[in-house]
Every structure is written in C-alpha cells, then in structure tokens.
Picture 1 (spheres, helix red, strand yellow):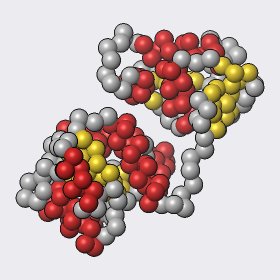
Picture 2: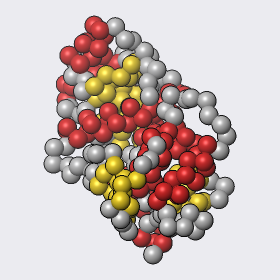
Picture 3: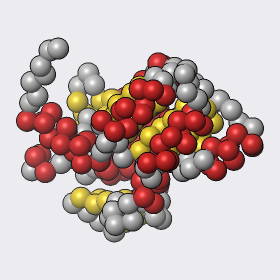
Length: 249
C-alpha cells in the first residue's frame, strides 16, 4: 500500500473531516456508492464503503461510524435483516436507501429501527441534508450552523433568504443566491464550476456552457465595489471560484 504524504492544507482538511465523523455506506451498486461518498466527502465527512451485509457488520465495529447509509437489496443479507442486526447492539443512526417505494417497505424499514428512508432515484443534495438532519437529532448538544454569514459589510441571512451590502438590500436571482451561499459558507474552499452548476440546477436542466461564469459576473456587479477587481469572489483559473478568507487579508 502506498503511503500518502499530506500537505499542511490536506492535513487540515483531514482533521475537519475526522471531526464530523465517518459515514458507513452499505451499497452493492458501485456507481451509487461512489456518488453518495463523493457528496458526503464534499461536506467534510469521511466515508467507508462496503458492498454486502457481512462486511457491514464488521465495518460498523471497526470504523466507528456516526451514521450508516444502508441499501435494502444486498447480497447475502438484505438491508432489513442488517438493520435488525445493528439495532440489537447499537443505536447508531441508520438511513435506508432503496429502489423500493411501496409503503409497507418504508414502514418495515422504519419499524426495524431506521431513522430515515430515501427512495432511488434520489437527489444527492437531499440525501446530504437528510444525513445532517439525522445527526442534528442524534446530537442534541451540537451547535447549529450560523444562519447569518457576513464579511466586510456583505451579509447573507439564511433564515430570511436576504442579502445586503452595507445595509442596502440586494436583489439576487435564485441561482446567484445559491452560488453566494455556497461560497460564503466555505471561505477559501475552491468550488469547481461543475459543483456550482449542480447546486444551481440540481435536476440536471440543460444549460449553456459557462453559465456559471455568467452568474458570477452578474453577482460581482451587485456585491463588488469594482467588479473588474473583485474582493469577495475570487477566480481560480482553470478550476472555479472561491470566497475570500482570512489568508487574503
């Protein structure tokens, strides 16, 4: 096995992920498992993926997950049986992920101890938000994320869906608001255009090339003193955009 050498920045990200905890993904479809892992890791979680029930029982002990995402249709041991087995010895939060959408299947999963039930095909963003909601309920002492984001007179109020600059309300489109919320929520993090595109158009709507650049240009016109020399939204050439952080002065 090759040893990875992490930069200080990489170590910092790893520590942040460790702080959120590991999510165990039990899914026999490799593409679905990879999609779930990608979206969770973008939010700062670490993930462990296994593909059958036997592996899952061992992993649930070995990696000490904070939550299990559990597919129903598994080889050797189905998700219902695995959920029962986990519940015999643990109150670990469980989200069931399955193609079954009949009411009795959902009721059965919840009756066996699952905390939530998500039917395929699903929105990865919805899946992430459901995971966060389960963890908030299971960790009542965990502080809620700040709802007011601000820097140098630029304010974004998540509860009221309002943005202001130096106290002056700004009229943003839905896409502009989603982009600004993503960037301000993670100062310094570089967002590739593809991820911002997914946040603006989660249902896969067909859009023109470079549409994110257009949105960013219009957003800068509204929030920057000099859009040609932006202070808030910075371009990372060849990759995407990031919001100014403390290291930028």
